[in-house]
Image (tube, rainbow, N blue to C red; front, side, top):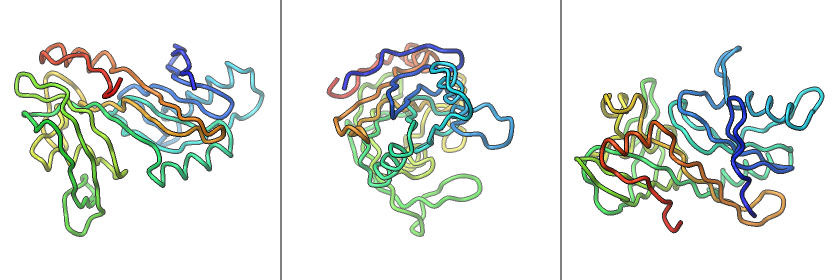
Length: 235
């Protein structure tokens, strides 16, 4: 399936749209879904865009099937129909969606590794604890410069704060992550970007891949550190 050329709209950058799906590029700092009445959030922006773009009367259905943390940027996929919502929820539950993230971490990592931890969610965050749920990810180092590594991270499970907690536990916290590492003058948020989703279309069945290029703040960070503007593995 050919990707939709990115559509720039007020408050929204559309990466893919068809009769069943809407994929958008979430900016860092924006909630995926409102936490309280009146919160600005990506889901409501998506509904507003569909209503205006297709001149839809009344309420617009848009199904939320996964989330990104508020300070993480990148691809978020919504369902435009109940059939797509049900099938996408099942695909995410079965780990049938390939999720690749871009991360900048402190230190020089190995060229690649698989990390496995038990993560326990607590009030102040996620900790490694034998009583926790199993978490697994793999990464490939794309570049290293000035004491930092640029990684392509593939999630194999979907735990809260998984990438942030696991990389910190491995001794390589995300740059700019005060919860699991430390603040940075170079970036006002964790250096984490949801780069790519690959899955089978929930209705038509053909494979699709949705990509969001690194945003301006992350590109600026890469330039300051002497790290390259990356290409997706295999891309």
